[in-house]
Length: 268
Image (cartoon, rainbow, N blue to C red; front, side):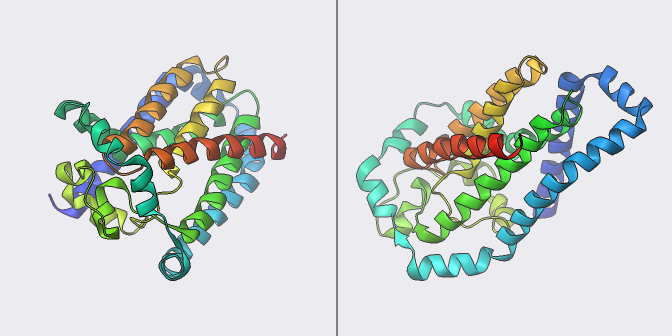
């Protein structure tokens, strides 16, 4: 499969997922009300814009510093892969063995498409909420996740279980994602480095979404159920695909709680 074809398919699947979430969790009534109240839409956009701007700035800085951070990390960072492998051994490999092929295929879809749906969907859902507070908290929490994780990526050099052999050890886990979609590396290389595993941002951002969905479950009960399934699947997929250590996932969960605590205070 060509890279362009793969990227197109992933984008199409993500867009379809977002439309499905919007239809299921927001509903046609809210969309109709928004269409009939353009002044309300403009006010909501103005309320959200500063927070969206901060997040965009953090993401741009992260992208702009991707290569320098990787260079600094490899020169001065702490080599943590042997330590992680010494602590966990083949735990992730054992975990992978619990799942049949069809479930691993599901986790591949969740990791590549479901993750994007998890991240973007709450912004769409909360835009139509009764108050602007949830979407503010979401955007601030996202910014905090990245602001904390990026310096850690520079300070800690760690390969995931599927790449542990690159740090001088033996491979402890299968590279399941690459077995299913080998061309995915041509896309991910522009987004991330394979040493950016501690903490797991897939975990921290997904758990952030879940924590916020819990606080808005009264207004958006369907979104809470969907977020629980998707976020939980993303977290499991990080280990089922051999990408992250259990330690990475634990750190990601802790980061999610920190991000939500900061976001709650900032966005009040």
